[in-house]
Length: 240
Image 1 (cartoon, rainbow, N blue to C red):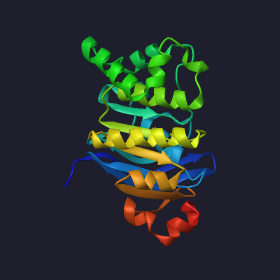
Image 2: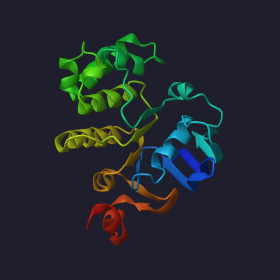
Image 3: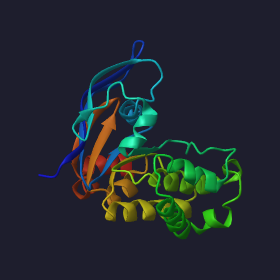
């Protein structure tokens, strides 16, 4: 059995009297691309923020472990040192830094300058637009270009686990296809990925396994290909 990289058990998140997440269990094994799909407001982003310790003040119960060690109490910026990286919803680029400086920030835990330089060139080759604009401030980029930058920046730390939160949100169809092409390629390189995505069809086509969230709870899980053919998933999320 493959090594479990991330395990979430009995996760509950409540803001005052509002229960945003209601006992979620999920796991991601080494080398997998696992997707968490569901409608807007289902609790997907809250689940990711609970994993990374970036929630606003609220009540959190349950256990979250990464590489067999609990994440409770870990400062979120320390997770990058453990090679757990996240591309947040809304991209979260450093708007007043250049593209090049953003990529360097993604590698701030590394000391191998030659390797860092090589990785920057690698991602410039994947995203030629970033190379063309390397000295441009990230805040002046289009949404699609910022998404490219956010993904490249996260990958600069050589993550063991990459968390992606709604990478296709607000992008043109051609840009969505480019982003998913890169997600599939990164997965083929052996990087473990947990993908939160509203575009259920693209997410399930790319993933090995899937979880469906509805109203804060996991309502279905299974092989991603099987879920694509499931009438319940098709009716609720695929418009079929």
